[in-house]
Image 1 (cartoon, rainbow, N blue to C red):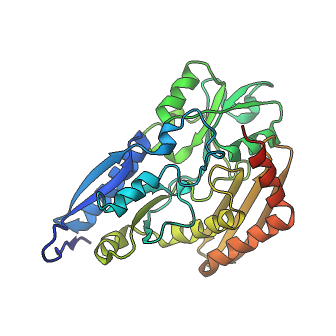
Image 2: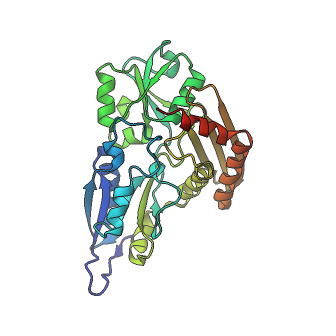
Image 3: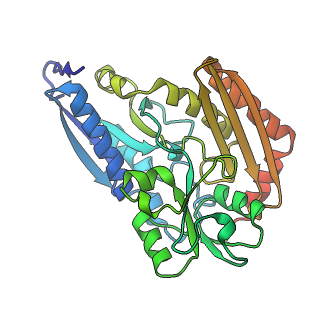
Length: 323
């Protein structure tokens, strides 16, 4: 059901400006949010404010070493503070648990496919890759899980937007690459997926597949506009996942995975998490079931189980070993 936008006296509030990165996937996400806002609110206008972030510019640097947490969103947040934009749309896996004072997540949209995808022109499964095959990924989380299962692979850094990564694969620089299923599906590139990797084999990043909308905390009008876009079930799951990475201080660029599933029948969350070494030789795992109403606590308990097994030492070693 659509609502009618009521303008605040003396202000032009029939236009919402969305801060977004310029990559094709980021623009898809912004356009998705724009379409949802227009579908829910009569009389609203929505404009995109596209910009380049520091993460987009650092294409030859390991993100984890230069501060991967927030690299793709800081410029967008500055636009919110400067009031050049009203909301910012992010891939939730790129959003730190702690946001700047005055900002919050006004909505978490329904989650897409959280799985990772094998993309290859020659193989239909990871097990088909020959010894020494070169696999491209920018994710230490994917690297550690790949090498744990297939130690004879050669995993190489791969940066750039989805099209750039696919081009490098097609040019023969890699035998295969690993990307997020959600991104390929949203860009109408699902035909490039050779295999969707089960979460039992490749545990996703916290928040993977979810789109988040950030806005100023003191803007009640925007909060009302965003409310119909919020998905409570997705929010419960990603809150538990993000609590794990927050407690570990891992971030999306470290070899940390966390994935929660909501069982509506028993109103519980099933949360799994993993920390690994980038050579794949060490992996620490933990899992727990708990009430869906206590996702943050569940995530903290799972993180404590990882820490009890030495996760903090392992992550410190990973960080120190980065180039």
